[in-house]
Image (cartoon, rainbow, N blue to C red; front, side):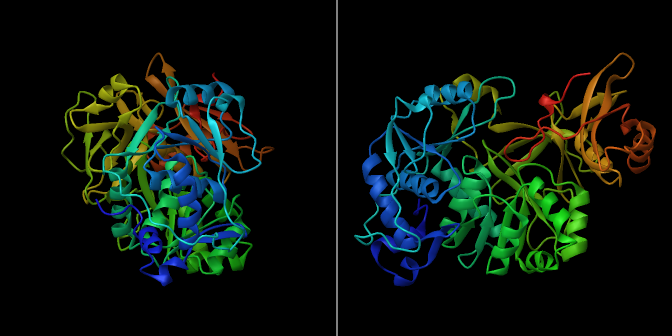
Length: 494
């Protein structure tokens, strides 16, 4: 396997001064060139060399990015830790992964759960400076199957599991995205995503570094920050639906933001479905379509809308190069017809898949149907092969009156209603129907919410009568996690 980061290798061996002085990372007003990154990460890599694995206290800072790159240079698996994780869950993750070392930004407090891990502060030179000592030779590239990251998935039916991501999977997924998005070293990525997750860390930091481009991390999302960085040379924006919703809310009253978004080469949304309503609002204001892609911690990226493809709001596009995808019925039989209506579970296989769950061979075996990974995501495929996610098998597939209904399409329909700000759809037991459709709605005007019948009729007219909500419950806000995903299991009962 070639180097995971060719530009770092070129900066290290001194073959190209142009690469060495090229911007690599910028967090706020602090930045590193490729030469500076090699030196800063190389120093840390020497200190952790030979460790079984290393935890990274993953704040949205330059030190986190340098620490992860250092681990990858050293061939030591990195375990990114969410600083907002609760005590019990963090204790489980640390106990399960048993990292002998933890990397952190100098001065940051780390919790007692990490007391058994030796702390190493990641030292980064001042903003824009190249660390003293110049560049250094990188260690030999580890084998493709070597573990690169251990990323813990959010537990829905039990404690989080550590997905072991090999170097092979990271390279395969980033190269497939480069082909689909025409992603090159000339691109400047703008983002404000957390760095303990695949989206912000693998795509949003390792992606630009593999291409030889640069990333500008805002630290904290703001519409103004996005507009400023795109106007100052940013070519790509990665975000989650919550961020694009806020941009859609702001863009009508901010012509400079609209201009900045319109000037970007690529706007990408992921980690959850982007409501069609926000697609259309942003397109109307900027003339630009948002590209959606679909992936998971265990599979990295599976599908994407291509930059040169036809826009299709609500679709996550076609399987990426190297990825095979199929839909299956509950009995495991493959759905062969592409009619855009038949709902099935997505299964995938390819070089993008993880190696398995750390210390959990039972869970790893249960996650596969032969060599196909069971995603638990439900979707339909159009005649042209485009994939449209309708929800999670565990929480978003509603069996009502003999129909299989995906919550996602009902949520999109509700969001098109002018008096609805946010919406989530679940199923609950019903003596007659088996399950009935329940809508959880945040009204645009809490003092004047739409009626149950008004919303049910709206959905029935947009989709089909059997998909209308049988109950509507109003909330002040929907529960969401750090990536903006709605946490349906946290919705109140009854």
